[in-house]
Image 1: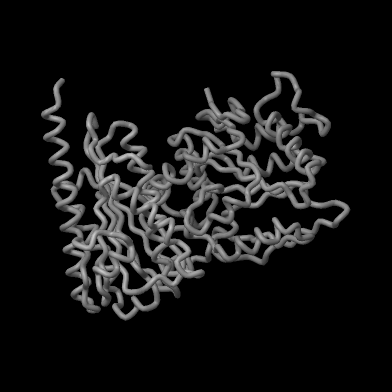
Image 2: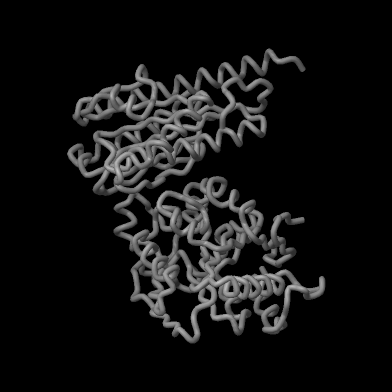
Length: 220
Length: 262
């Protein structure tokens, strides 16, 4: 994907927003007990209740040394609350984000090719550094996928739990101005999840509203 | 519902070991598939491949992969072939739930270390393969079944079947790259869904411990179907062969090279 595809002139049909929540489940996250799971479920609930919910499709991905897609991309109203999961060793941060972005880029490009108006949002919650070996093995792929995602107008949110969100965003090449730093505290994580779901809601609502106006303004 | 395995078995009976790809246009799709597989094995050996040819068989759940794979192995006759199901690599229930998956099936619900170990044996040309076994009722791992192939009679072909075999889903990249060939079983999603739900109903009626009809439908909609567009459908264009099935599971066409079903 090299061409700028952000403006979708001529896109038709109901607009759609693909969203993915990426949550760290490395061992260090066990200090927060069931809070990350509650944060995921409250995020899903808020999107279900949002004004743009009919346009929102959601996916939930968790990672430790491996990456698991706990909720494959589907309309948010269809998603049931997640059950508890265990934590593992390692933090496959860069590889996971690269995997997610690559798939989202493909999904968006394919949808756009069929004339659909689509946007995408990815939020990454983590409390640690990437531990992949060899060090930085996924960085080139991550960089490439972020460039493609930015090209397509993705909303990219980095949330550092007990670590500097801006530094995390820089490390992931996400926009620093959208990054958040969260104190390593259960309540703060839940608040951050609420903030992030609000940002995704706003992004979705603006996108769908804009698309509807454009469709209305288009001749014929 | 006609099971593709029955079609394949019937085809197998008609398929002589000496059959060549130049068989006339009257050959049915499964016989053609058997012929193609045999030819691929012969060509791989002639090209100096010193391990089994590894062929993936992919298609939606309910499309009849495992029965077709077993029937193909039987039909290949003089070709030493082994069928392996991705289902036999499932994590046991507690380990699966610990990873956050309620039901088995989607990417992430398999024991990837076990899969890697098996692939190492397979692609390394090991004389003995420990083929994993998984009991679906108890959701417990069973002792692996050792299969020994002496140097004088090595394994020619390993068919690995599963609904996203060949997809580079997270953790499954090695399996995807281990495949020498890929067969795509094409069936309409609604037909496959009907077959999958029907199979579950039969197992329920036979007293097996299975999900309720509602849970199966929910499982299909939430945990399986959303993966199809990502992992299964793109494999069609990458497959070496596409076997098309109608709504009654009858093979209707076999497309080799540039897959296009009517």
